[in-house]
Every structure is written in structure tokens, then in C-alpha cells.
Figure 1 (tube, rainbow, N blue to C red):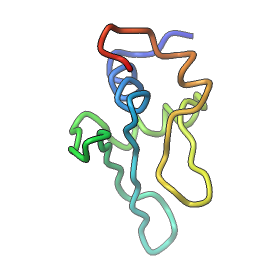
Figure 2: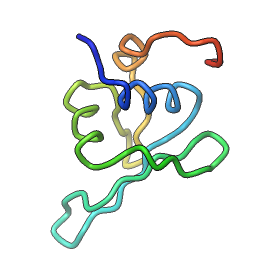
Figure 3: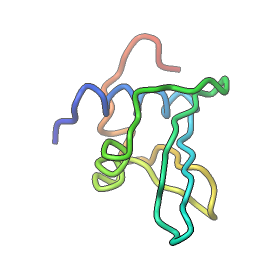
Length: 85
């Protein structure tokens, strides 16, 4: 299964130690998402639709109510680049 360029960028950030934080509204639905790099910088390339696509592909998940991180499936989907650690 191929992934888009935008999904690839987000997965690279997550593979390097980044995280996705969500905000929920009063009815417990996801209202907004933001991607943070391992250094704490905000990455503007993530929107709600892209986040839902990554969750549908099981590339990201959350545990114990924490931020979303990359899964083993996400690591399989991401292609290697020279700047990955």
C-alpha cells in the first residue's frame, strides 16, 4: 500500500520522535490536531483528514490517553531517508 507525500512527511517526523496531539470538543469528538517534532516545534502540514487517513491505515496510535505516536505498521509504511535516525 502506497502512501501520499504528505503522509510520508508526517510519518518521518513521527519516526524521528515526534508526536500528534489532539483536542476534543464538548461531545468528545476530535476538534483539532497538531503535529509536534521531537524538538517541540509545530509542523503545519497535518490536518484532520490526513490524521484520519493515518489512523485508518493503523500507522499511528495512542496509548493510555497520551499523544499519538508511530506504530510498527507506520514504520513499515515509511520509506527510509538519509536524515532518519
